[in-house]
Image (cartoon, rainbow, N blue to C red; front, side):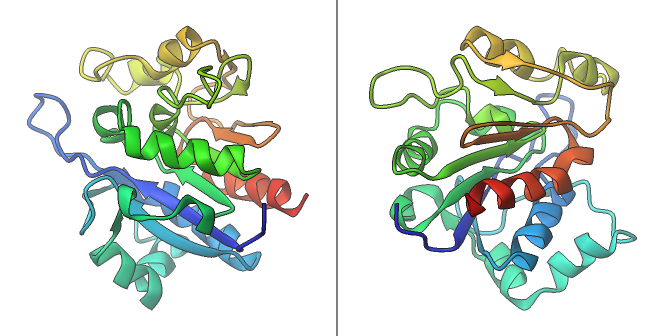
Length: 226
């Protein structure tokens, strides 16, 4: 595929944590840290969301200079206020797509045919698909043109069943992400709870949790450089 130097970060538009009465959204450090690594490596990052507009945000920690820099960056701030809807982007414009985590993804990434189609088109054109933490919820329903699941037979990392239990949300999320990926034929591996863990399988790059976000960006940069 011709290289564009562009990477799309996909954010959830879902803001309710089941029926807990708590809010959720995309997890800011999981967008900010890959953005920093990708930008420093010369890639142009665009923000995309399920519904467009300003997506709900979670996990904000402004003592983290990378998160502060992301929010202060004029280009990112402008895009965050007016994210492009997933169905309005052109897959051929991007070398890679990154599914950013946050619990909201568990509700609006799976079953989203627009999102799945974009990732399939990027992947089948020789591009890279990446996801971190709960972002792999976006991978569970991606099927390739031959009808097989993208993750089938692939090594992946994602927020583990054990981590979901530690977060006290096993009975809140619509499904367990690790289990669902395994149902799709993925070979899931996990590190200890909340420890960084990134898996690269060809042009599929996945990270387990927020601690994996920077390493996910670094792994993605290496794969894109091939």
